[in-house]
Length: 72
Image (cartoon, rainbow, N blue to C red):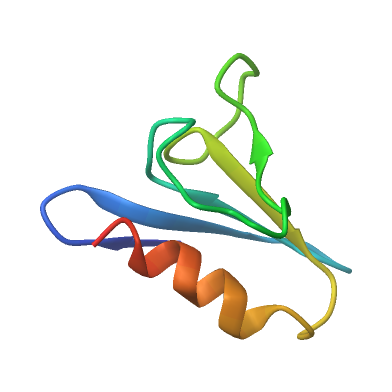
């Protein structure tokens, strides 16, 4: 599942016990103070962009939304 504006902004990969979120930005462009976004620029993946976030609970939802808003 993806959210688009002119291009994909974010992709969601729903799995049984977690969700992977791919943020459509080049690595080095997000301000991620918590360091939860992983660099996947040199790894083959099915999502958009160079950032992957693994979500297994809702403790960082507001922070993750702030990272996604940086792409807009």
